[in-house]
Length: 206
Image (cartoon, rainbow, N blue to C red; front, side, top):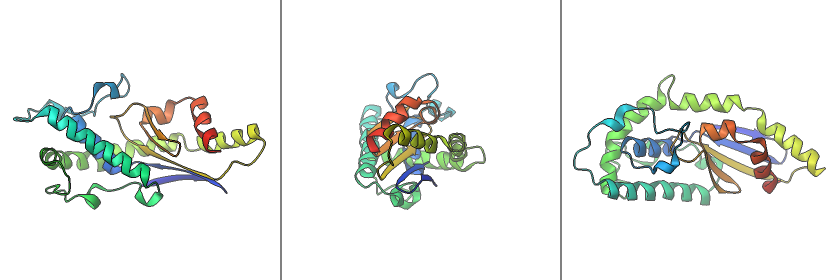
């Protein structure tokens, strides 16, 4: 689902993307994500699944495959930014019974096991999708206020621009500033990045 903050010439779209969140869920479940992507308030997925014993896993190989998968999806979205490519469902891209579309054979097996756990949590009443929606509501008017203030500072209308924001539950630093028009952000970043940070970001576009 996409939320949109828009005016005559500009548009900011936020997306709680199922695919990106599934990638991160799988990475957390199998401990494939580098520790520097977490901090005290941005912790690995709140699940005991990572404590399960996974026999015969080649963790370093899986870590490499996971990074290639994550980076590939980010690059694809970055190179094809439009609202039709946001908020992709896992089942739209992969056969969730076997994940044969996924290039990495070892990682397919992880995805087959992680997907049922993920989708159960993602879709439950107080699950991931609902949690991210809550954060979107909490900052609903922030962007319009920032644009109004920026317009006053510039003493002109802002130029036309689009900013796309993917919100993921965890697994990346508070903000992954991919380029001027696309960022990936956690709820921590979405809620608590300073006004100055957002104003600098928007000024590049305006």
